[in-house]
Length: 150
Image 1: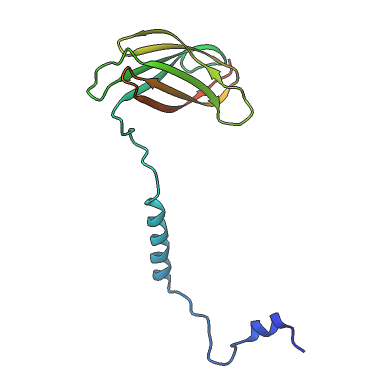
Image 2 (image 1 turned 120 degrees about the vertical axis):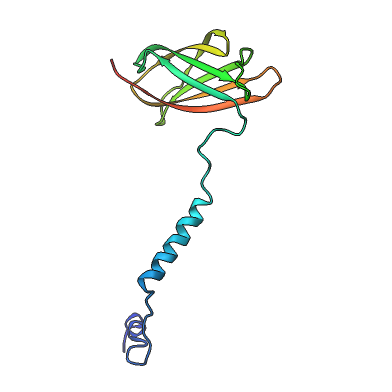
């Protein structure tokens, strides 16, 4: 008696059945279709749709472990500085298990906010900045930063 798997593997041999292979050009077409379908789902990486410009610079630059400052600049879609926003700043490491560092706003003028922050460890961080405008709208950004060991 022939085992079922062996019999299935032999099925079709010698009876005019053969596996059809796609020619190389067809494989390329199939590959391109899958790649293009994946591109349609990608999120845009350009500027956010709210039109506001929010930038961040570290002092010292590059940032080092310990006390530091972030200079956050906020402009409206027309390029005018926004000085009356309430900012919340939170720094987190890219890996789990670390406590976040919360920024304290120490000064604000002409759309520029000075934020005191303590970097607890060297490595890759991201800073979440949430600016609540006077009219209640919220502008939020996540910006990457690398902190160095002294």
